[in-house]
Length: 400
Image 1 (spheres, rainbow, N blue to C red):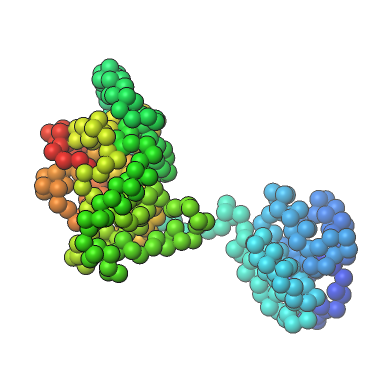
Image 2: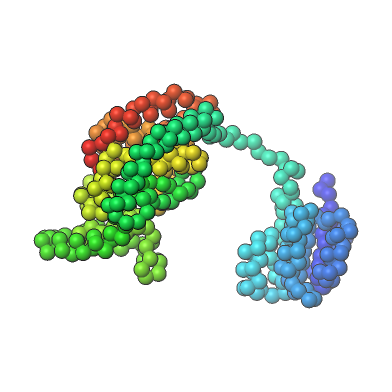
């Protein structure tokens, strides 16, 4: 037999709850204002549910609901708001505050409200009182051996390289003004500040714009056609106030395009087997910058990220925020379960294939490395093997 529901009604609608005593499976206690209701709840067993008029003397039902949420023992009581007439603002506020339900007294049926309360009584119980469905969850965690290795290697490399790093930092500073490093937001298992040595001139956007305009005198008219993807505005930038962009700007010939939209267009062009722009000999890159890019020295500050715990020596490359936002499908977002790393599986495979790899291959390899952390799959020597394969490719021929 279903136990009776003990309902507390706060309000003055005496006729709404009248029903044949022999047929009802609930009992109700009526209190006409929120002050009396507050005192009652403080000194008596809590009811199974609360029905509260929206219009109360001195305040309203939403105000009373706010008070309930401050009382730990009363937060899970199903709460129904009962209004005399529909009020758009009250309805929106009730929805935003996640009140369990909202009824209009003139059109609501009592049996519907009681049925709703019965459902809520079952599903708003504290978690400890519910029968939870056990699910098998894949566990991805950072092995202790990997973390110890990361801290040890990162610390030793920074100490050994510190004299050389000081010379590089001095060279960067002498060649162009500005900070010797730059920070960008990247996404791994979380969003973090990603460190690199600066390889470009600061404040070079205006210089690039001038160079692009000067170059344009010798450009063919075909570069200005409507089919040029660079002419399509970034949808994210168009939603921002004038002068603001969703990501850093790039200047290509006479075109100005944000980094996010450039990468989107490039991916689309790859799908359609069409040609897209490629930046060659970017004048923003300094002489020192070109050297540290070709030798991967600009990556050394990421060892600080490793020591902080943001990254690992080996992992999936952390992505810029705008790229990470596009990986929403489970098959793609799986890569984020592995720690972000300075080098990883797809980088090694990429160099082994002469720098040619499709996005699909890269995603597959990222997911493959993520599986490396599932359960007891982790192998310390597998990481060592990837590091050893990375070392011969550190001195690269071209800028990356």
